[in-house]
Image (cartoon, rainbow over all chains, first blue to last red):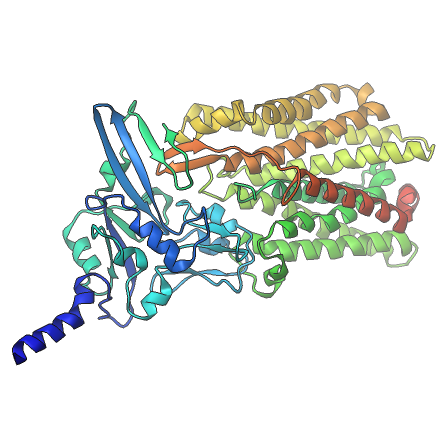
Length: 232
Length: 345
């Protein structure tokens, strides 16, 4: 009975970590990063919805969104889901352009916004090659994904990660070789969006080439983040 | 609320700042280049520069999400940001223009006038060029927007600044002198016409070179930009910016008869000003009409300026009326603008 109890207690303690809800904090100086496994994304929008709920993102704006890309012509068609968010670049183009230093790169790799300092000029929005920022009409400042900083402070993973039903979003510390992110980066082929920008993005994708590959003459339909459908 | 982050208000700002810098540069020509024919309009140019500089931050302030925090640019400037330079450059330029105009109006008989005037002009012209160039740098250094990412934009902004400043000075010179039944100095008009013609030639050549190079490169972004310029911005780009504001004045001003005529100079200068405004519009609005729907998959959006509300026709009309009021006020306060030839000696 005692063994069962202790196993239950240990399970209760470790379950959140096993369920990808709590962070393993092993290194003193973490460097947070995210891997998105496109082969596991089912396009359920849980990440998008949970992010909006968690961070109070206004109507028609998103900190993270899922692009739906339909390719090919009937009957040879396929659908790809491409979750997008701030790439927390190592060389972010949004940071140096901010006239008041309201956008800054933290030691733990997160690109954050000081909402008390931001003047809402929108320069960072224009400079971001990933269109990851938006002007928040409720606060008069610019807003973006910050990996749910308030949850990280409580050793919890961002809302989009904990609510991903397919386990497609994996979050962890690059400085911890045993973190799920480090393990994936060491064992699987990953790539980043628009590496040619030189921004050194730190959101990695599995299966990205297949999703964004452009075949000349192929019909591509993209459902952009704010309504409508684009045919290419 | 507009679907573009930088709406029509932002296109008004470089229009004003260009005129302020251009008019200042014209005002320094008698002192720095010893071009005596510009003496007559030098103080008028300075008054135009001063009033336009005063109005120039208004559209920016109105556009900010948190305008009450605008002072943060002075308190927490980030040196890596060209926009942070704005506050300081504007302040330095405004102080220089104010000192210059005060000195020229009330202290031109002081013994130190002849040594101070060239110094003010020399520093001022550098600040004026930086002031118009840095705005071009904000756009030209932005790799996220296909149309803006172009190292020639700062040069083009400086040229169009001189162009718009000279054009407005020419319009007001003809209008005010005629209202006062004063005779226009034909040499002054001719020289302004020549400045306009040469700079217009470089400006149109730059635009033509850009179109040629981009069309030849056929990048994915240009293919969609091409659609924007031939469809949504077809009229403002080819019609207003290139033909009305570029090629027509270029042809007309090549004739000395036209540059000697107050009417022709005013009309051509007006066309140039309209063309420069279209240029600001096409760059700022046009650049944002290309939207990346997904990585490397581009689409377009539309922008129709609202009649009322934030960044609307009403707001911009109000700003232009305020500008007209400030221009009139400048001419009343700094009333020596007709004495240019006399003060410069």
